[in-house]
Image (cartoon, rainbow, N blue to C red; front, side):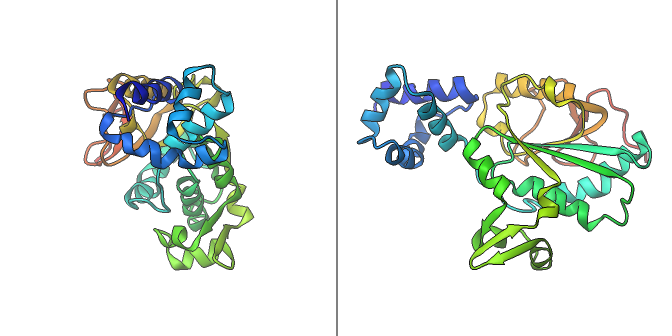
Length: 276
């Protein structure tokens, strides 16, 4: 692909989603946009590029952004963040807010829903221990198409085999052929909403915990900083931020600092050190 053509996609994706693509990733354009080309009955990438140079259809642009920003996910991904949520976050919130409180969690860039559903299942598994606590899970993503999949809660055999323990699979899903569907009591614990991380976040109120894992790696440094600074205003003073293993706040923002002794876990920069 010519540089001048590549720049059409590069600039559009950055403007609409903050996603940064480099020329060494140009191969992803053709593979990920093939379904879009087919859906819109466009002959090829050249014709698609020509459409984008004019005044493109808003839905076409949305489909392109959806295709390029949909990322891989899985149930209980990396496991440790969910263990830390159970063992560190919930006790800290209870200490700050008292028993019988409401704990609000934001799963940002939730993709097809495995992360927020994993959190919901974690809550169900600990229901006896956490009796009296209310949990609210907000799960957002830029892609409307992927959110429709998340709301449906239907997964293939391959998808549920990746990370979901067999006992939990049988307990919280129903099987129809090769498809596994999340049971309604788990679905009802998660509220899904279309949202662009570049937009203002004031509408969401305050959260006790934010999961924003494996998405900041797709942004440039200034955009990462802006997103994290906005999130800091939405996180309670006692709150906790989870990032992916390859992500950090260091050198990007002064709003957060690593939680001492915990990888991938961050708190407000002025938060007191954890009690020994």
